[in-house]
Image (cartoon, rainbow, N blue to C red; front, side, top):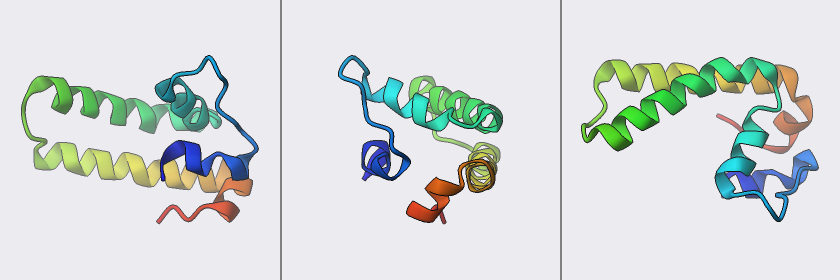
Length: 88
């Protein structure tokens, strides 16, 4: 379903001038506490995507930890979204 499918319950729509990546970033950064976990995920993604290697156990664990942190942040800071979307 992706971010665009999750957006209607939040009341956010993709702007005509936004790329999918820009729209996703805007949704993700709605909570200031999201910045740390998102930074971890972006860094890991770029290392694996452009580093031409498979993620190691440490990278996989870091990604899982960052995703779990995002779920906690969003449940706390964005209660309207946690009611509309199941994140686990």
